[in-house]
Length: 248
Image (cartoon, rainbow, N blue to C red; front, side, top):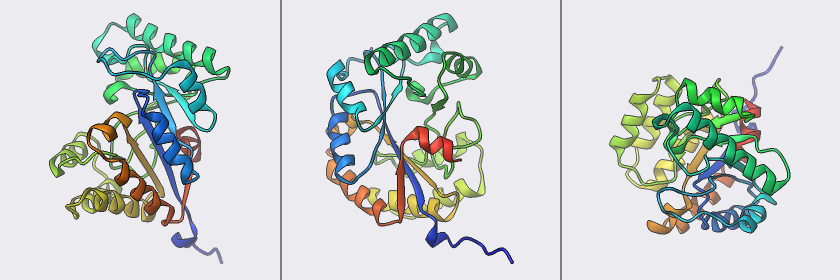
C-alpha cells in the first residue's frame, strides 16, 4: 500500500529575489548569509530612474554566494518601447553581466513585472532559461518558465493591494488560501508568516521578493531578519530562483 507523504516531513521550498541592483543588495546578502541562505539578485547596468546601481566589483562580490540575473540595461519597462529597443536592452544587460562574472546568466526579471508575448519571446531568444514576474499569492513557480510567479513582496502593502493582485491573475483555490491567510492579519510580519504557512500546506513553494532600497527607505531591516528566522522555523529549504524553478 502506498503511503502519503506527511507534510510535516516535506520541507517548504523557499526562494528570495531582489530587484534593481541597488548597493544595499550587499546588506541583504550579508543578512541572508547569516542565516545560511543564498538569494537571487536581478541587476540592471544602470537605472534610468536615478537610483544607484552596484559597481562591477560589488556585483562580482555578490555573485560569489548568490545567483545574479538580468534586469535590462537601463531599468526600463520593456512593453513601452519598440521590440528592437527591448531586444537591445535585454541582450546588452546579459552580455555585460556574463562578461563581468565569467559564466552564464540564466534568469531575468521583468522591470515592474510588465511583459507580453513579444517580450517573453525576446527574453527566451536572448538565451535566458527563465524570467520572473511580480504576480503574487502563488505557492508554485507556475508552468511557464518565462512567467514565473512569486508569493509575496517584502513591503507592507494595504489589503486592497493584495486584492487587486489576486484579481489581476487567475483565481485558484491555492491563491485563495494564501489571500485569506494574508488578509486574516493586520500586522505585516503576521501576513508574511501566514502566507508562508499557507504555502507549506498547499503547493510547498514560497517566493519572497523585494527591493533593498525599500528596506532602507521604510526601515524594514529588522523586520526582514525576524521573518527569515521565522522561515527557518518552518522546516524550510532555501534555494536560488534558478533552483526553485527547476524543482517544480
